[in-house]
Length: 147
Image 1 (tube, rainbow, N blue to C red):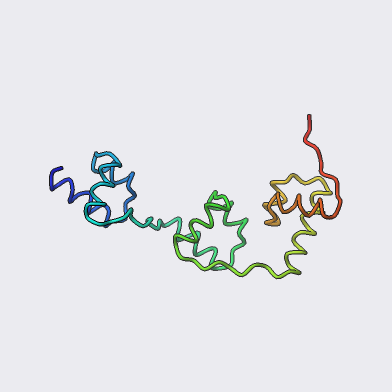
Image 2 (cartoon, rainbow, N blue to C red; image 1 turned 45 degrees about the vertical axis):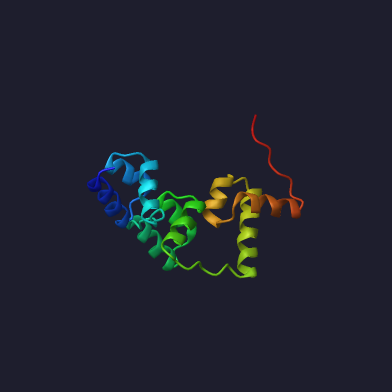
């Protein structure tokens, strides 16, 4: 491999481009990128923090409710926590037992009133599996999907 191409790969790595981005930019295969990085004792680059990531972390750190953050940035819980991890944002303490119980009671009541599961999760932050577990524990029959 020519030295200029290798230097370009190393420069992009230092700029925290991903292996795929480096390969595309340098017009080489991802395997070639990995080989060059390995030859220089380097590992794959740390993920870059984007302005959106910073916004998510700021909102989370400011106490914005998680369901609002998910909606605002069109994220899933998994992606939210990946962003928080990437930005080294400390996780909030879990809600106290009385607060969790209150959220669950609200979610169960919404379910009994016929609210769709997505709305219950959006408004209370109670995930569907947790709600189903609470319904089972409270011996509340599950609604069946429409035919």
